[in-house]
Length: 192
Ligand code: GAR
Image (cartoon, protein in one colour):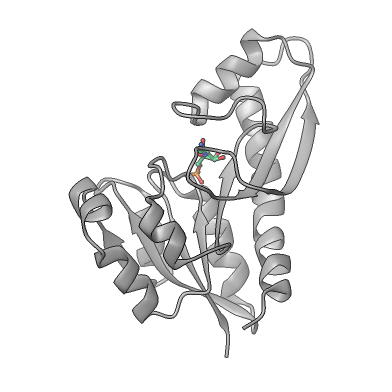
């Protein structure tokens, strides 16, 4: 049986798109559900384009009920992928899927992580610190923002004159290139 992936995303979902594209052709795994806290998120359109079902949840549903856990269990999800998902994962969900939740972060953790560090906030902090390099991190999720065990990092150079748009672009290129493959390798290692 194919391994089953669920993706959480809060916004555009360009990484979700790359993952859906990658596994559409796979005999090993498939994306079975997209979840979002944001009814306006463009990721919903992308899910629709791939004919993958989506679930929109509220803060109350996510933190005060077991609905999301039940949905994921009913679908027999093997791996949960956070791709631009901005809410902290509740302890109940972590407990229900131990070592089965991974996150993508747009910097080289442990630097530039933690609460409030997402998207442009991260890149602006990297620029303000005059770093000579930045990159991406894919890591297991625990009860703290951006602190679980690191699975993968890749880096790019920041050239003099690089602005926010440029480093965002360089980071996104790496994300799109590596994230689907890291997921595939992790799934291969996971026992069924
Ligand atoms: C990605 O760059 C991801 O690294 C970042 O959100 C973006 C989502 O882009 N995640 C975080 O900042 C999490 N702290 P996408 O919606 O186009 O995939």
